[in-house]
Amino acid sequence: MPDSMDVNHVNPLTRPAPIARPDQPQQSAPGGKDFKTVLLESLNQVNNLQQEATAGVERLATGDTENMAEVFSAVRKAQVAFGLLMEIRNKLTDAYEEIQQMRV
Figure 1 (cartoon, helix red, strand yellow):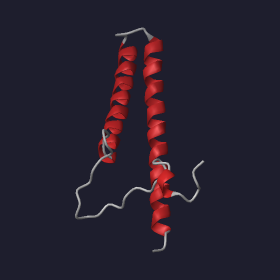
Figure 2 (cartoon, one colour):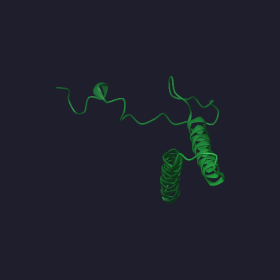
Figure 3 (cartoon, helix red, strand yellow):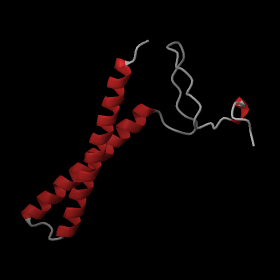
């Protein structure tokens, strides 16, 4: 069993991230995407789901489709995706406000 003070056995998931320096280019995680790319892709996915839901409601209202279950499913997916996006925004806002209150 490793000693609790032995730094060689630190879980890599709990290691603090290296501090970014302004003179160094930002790097994403190995094999991953940077935060900006992930956020923009998520926003685009939510937007696409909302557009699909709107189009489904329009088709249902104009009589182009009678498949109410498909339209309901599209609308519900858009609602859940938007709700998740809003929760993520709220958590990011809370984290930002907490960081602002930190004393240096």
